Image (tube, each protein chain N blue to C red):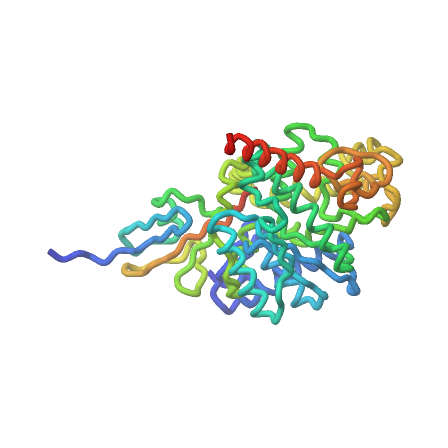
Length: 70
Length: 339
């Protein structure tokens, strides 16, 4: 059976990785991952993505939390 | 989305609070302007200052060091090894790696060697790790700065940190803490070095984006001791407000700092006249802030701790008292163990 390529969303601080269908905007992927957009930066390789950026199937993005405590 | 500044390149960073979006090059210009404007507005640093930058390996402190180096300040980095299994090693590695990339070697204080690693100290005295960490860090910031003839200590606290702290202080009406909350804590004649927070105008998202785009390899994991930190609750509340009303954080904080605001005037009026011996610009609000020397309140000039010589308002400073409590707890444990 053929598996359609998906978007890999990595959340390193939560030690989580999700496979979501694309193509979709970053803000939609974050909503599906349950992440508030203003608490993270999102990258694809060495590029930072804005929340309206359209991510294609087969891509891998990293969602990095910016909130520090203490 | 296009960059709102150059209108040519694609945007990489979107900042609703500034109604702006920037490409990487324009964001660098914007970010550095925010920091230098924050320094200029509150006269945090002078060109001739020797700056001790406290670096943890996280984004904010490394970004601060990076900007200050690029702006031509004479800086050295201070890394305090908290003695937290795994986390301290990883954060130290990031600090050393960044420092080497700028041709520098950080000054290191190893709390295990100083006899007060944070996790063990917290267990011994049954206090929260963050509370102990604050006391210990304040002590070494000042001690290393005084010994190394630094004129100022700089920390990487950003707008999110400062507004979270402000919200917490307001909700609990911590008047003493409110009086001392400011990006500039003046030094005193009693051996207390000036402390500044040059990132007070920039948010966590902005420092993270700057660090990422500049290729600064910072530790992204959180300190395992800070998971239950109350500051995270205040941060989340403010972040939800900011989501709905972008720009609220900076308005909140700038309003608090405004010398003509009723709250600031009230804090100034409430500050004891003898709160500090030599505040640098002579206002009573500064005098109140200058007392950020020790965990407890104090009046008059700080004096030298009878044990270590650090500035304090009590005979023995809070750091030495903490060390003594840890030492006693160890002795009790050892005695129990030998029975």
